[in-house]
Amino acid sequence: MQMTQSTVGRKVLMAVTGLILLVFVLIHLLGNTSVFVGPDGINAYAEKLHSLGPMVWIFRLVMLAVFAAHIVFGIQLTLENRSASPLKYAQNKKLRASFSSETMIVSGLVLLAFVVYHLLHFTVQVIDPATAAKAHMDALGRPDVYLMVVSGFKSLFITLIYVVSMIFLFLHLSHGAGSFLQTFGLNSDKTLPTVSLGGKAVAAVLLVGYAAIPLFIIAGFLKI
Ligand code: HEM
Image (cartoon, rainbow, N blue to C red; front, top):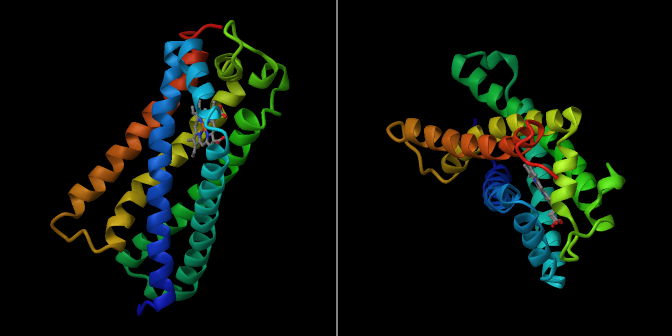
């Protein structure tokens, strides 16, 4: 299939915005691991972030624009792929390619739903107002993010939402990292196995790291 200039442009934007989002989830995971230190870890970390004032809002607006662009171009590319891949191309390779792009749109939309839920849970704090960090200060007068996170994951339902969403994050990233390099022509038949293994390894680290937080909490390792 001949790619139009706008398709190439959209693929490049998908790759660049995807990379920015990947860096965000890696840094966010590092920050979140401070929950294992206890209230002095995650409450101090959250307070430091919020003390950056207007910078926090500039960062949020940039990330919102990046996220929105990634979603809009992703939907456009999926629709283009669908109209360019009718059943007459029923070759194995073609089927494999459209299977991955179908997986990407489904996992991507699940992640969008997760991010909306997650923002309502820990940023707007309306899912469980009784344990909202803004309503409880710790012994040092900081919003008690530790209490909010640990109380949240005492619920099996919420833990399941997070763990299942992290599996979708794994699926999305294990394909996305390889597509990124392909977009920039950085993989060849020789390097493809290593590249796709590398993508899966990064995705697996994120899955294990993120899922460990709710699982350790529901297993009773972190106490309020
Ligand atoms: C176990 C998994 C996770 C935990 C415990 C967690 C924890 C948190 C907490 C406590 C906040 C609020 C920070 C604050 O305002 O003080 C937050 C915000 C956020 N999280 Fe997560 N997070 C998790 C997974 C994720 C994932 C997988 C993503 C992305 C796919 C994500 C994206 C975000 C975003 C975009 C924000 C808003 C940042 C802001 O307010 O500027 N989180 N998270």
